[in-house]
Amino acid sequence: MKKSKNTWQLATYQTERLSTIPSMASAVSKKISLFVQSHRKMVDEASLFFIHYQTDLKRLQKLKKNLANYSEQIDIINDYKKEHGKLPLIINQSSTDKYLTQLYRLEQQIKKEYATLQSKIIQQKINRFEALDHLTDNMLDLLSNQRIFSQFLGTIALSTPLPDEEVRCIRNEKYKPIYIAGLAVALFEEIRLTHDFKNPYLKDCMQDMFDDNNASFMALEQNELSNEVMAQYREDVLKPIAKAALLQSIGSYSPQAQAIFSGDRYRMLSVKERSQLIEIVRLKSIDYFKFGIGIPQRKVNTLQEKIEYTQFEQKKLSFMLSFFEKETEDNTELLKLLRIPLIYSSFMVSTKPEFNYKKIYTAYDTLKESALKREIDPLYTKLFLSMVGYFPLGSGIYFISQETNAIEKGIVSSLYPANPHEPICKQITRHQIKSQSQKEVIVSPKTNIFFTQARLNSEFEPEFYELKYKSTYTWNANEVWEVQIPALEFWRKDGTRKVNDQIIVKEY
Image (cartoon, rainbow, N blue to C red; front, side):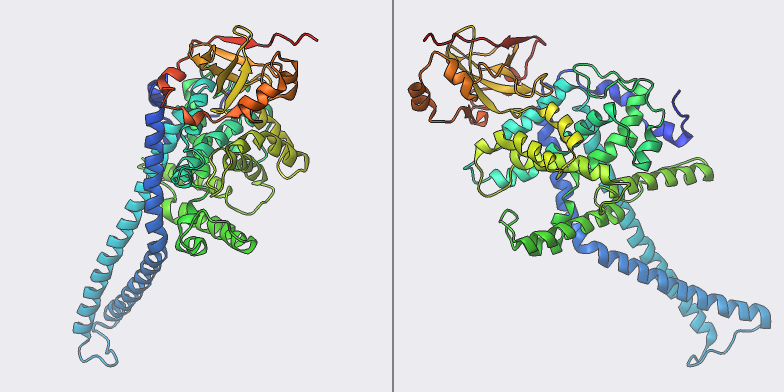
């Protein structure tokens, strides 16, 4: 039995929105472009916020203090008149009546200035909240099942610039927050299905939320949650996580952080500079959530509803802030959760000046090794690696087709492989000529020439491999994306998968 909800909560959950989630993401590329544009607008606005917010807040505080001083003086004079029947004499003032009139005028002037500045600050907070809320809502529409999520994440990976393109760092910086947020939500869902969270907000929020704990927000094809549960889960749990992930580096656009970058956001920082930057980003990101967004405005019917709404939204805000705070018992799970997508994204959407594409095939082992050293959470890492597999989504592989006995090209097209070393791919050549079907191929290590044993067991000689592939047994699929491989054609799937597991073995 799920918990009963307050009146204001029932109005919050937009179950009618769920019917608009696309069953086929035929325009995912366009959607991602819109996500990136929306996020960049938020970044540009945040840059201005960081310049002005402290001045505005100090000005507001000063006006409030001055207003209180004038009001107090007016009250003292009026109280004296009530008690004594006449106005008091004021030192250095020839006429108390004129002085009182001046006080009233100054009070009204400051009230107007205070109201104008307060209204501006509130409206800007509303605008920021709505921009972030709409972005996370639209993103979660593309995370509602494994198939559309694979297309969402794969499109980002395949759309990143080539290693030697000058715009690579700039464009990847724009894609990166979207990529991280998607992975963070997906990883949270994997953890939620198998483990309970100790975080007070999550425990309270998700208590009795699910009738069936096995029902997944990200099922293979069709979301298994009821509309009411899915809407509540999105609103109270997934959206706050996505928001924190999307804005995990928002503080890097503050003047203090920009000073450390010294005009180059992508240069290698010294240990001292990096340490300073991390602390600045953390503190300024907290300020952005606290003073730049805060608790959203909402109309309620009664004082009790207002109290309940404010209390709950404050808890939600505190939950998002805990992603940026120093580690405690309450937020350790959240920091461990976010750390894994952050590391993985540094391989897939790299903003380093020097970048070797082949490094993406080392991400799996790097995370696995870090988990063994307890640098990242072993349990969370295991779930994450099971989700992404050894061969990253959107990466290119070569495999020996059991149908053609030729070495064909494939692009990893789905997450959640049954075996991390058996990527789910779309085959894009047949007899080494461009060819696509709607069927996916599960490539076993026996036929994937990335693995030494597959090459040794094949009928092709080592000299052939060395001459043709020059010890590079993977390829950059970004080179052909939307040039030779149209996105709509690539992502079209009929739901069937064949297993490529056998090759013609050498005869000795």
